[in-house]
Length: 169
Image (cartoon, rainbow, N blue to C red; front, side, top):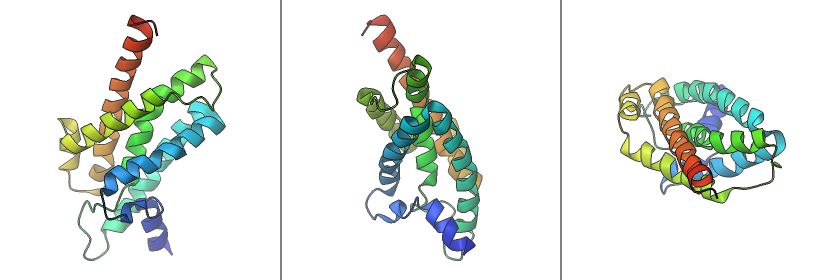
């Protein structure tokens, strides 16, 4: 039972089992859930889900990769992409929540930027993203995407500052 739950969490309800670009599919699957959490509970719910999801994902990844014949970072484990993607969305969710904007507002340019930059940092693995990836353990599996998500969030914040501040849009 515990192994089945770990597989369900690690593969984000089977999304990671899609044979084409599972990391990208996991990141895409994270978007509607991130939006739903923001809509229902604003930034606090998205932040809570991200933190809880990180620890559940770490637990599930640890159990999943301990099975015989599974590599240390199997492509079907996409809970790390989900958590990284949600982190990339934090500036958007926080900004809307802090401004008191209704939860159903969907600032699509920011969401697209968050997705693109998260995937870019996850694929290229610059600096600390690569360090975490090279750890070769379940925490490293989770951390490389957390760091990529933080990098993407920083880019999103800079972009929002330029767009809304400097350009006055």
